[in-house]
Image 1 (cartoon, one colour):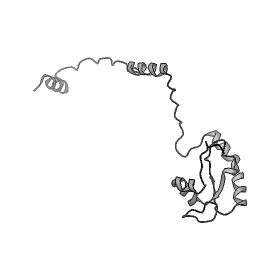
Image 2 (spheres, rainbow, N blue to C red):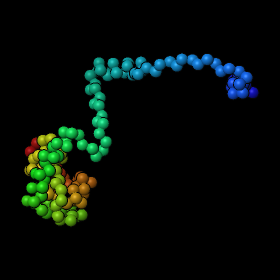
Image 3 (cartoon, helix red, strand yellow):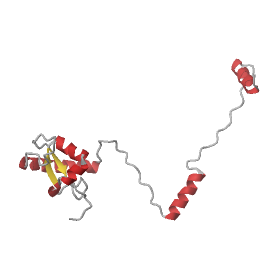
Image 4 (cartoon, helix red, strand yellow):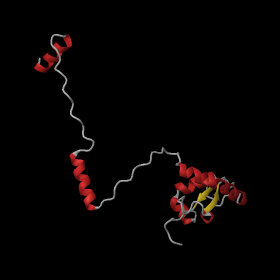
Length: 147
């Protein structure tokens, strides 16, 4: 049996006292290697990383909750004026139940009713899943494109 195993057995049987505990070395928060890499990146002008949001999927920030509360009555009025789906995809149910944002939901386009289309839920999902079909049929366009 190896010396190590004999020592462990003796400690387990109480024939020998275990070695006094050694103090663990503190783990540095940032390694020297990481510090050096960060210094090189900072000198080279790399952008600093953006902190990730603490929101889970499906959650809204307080700001977005306020915006959605303000926009909800506009959605209802829009759907009263246009009760039928304007997208008319292959999965259409024809009754408009939601709003499709043709230019996305960025801050510049969220309140712009010119970028809204009355939509049934299946069509809205179809447009999001079939990008090329939506662009070809005018139901989706780039929010960055100047018109």
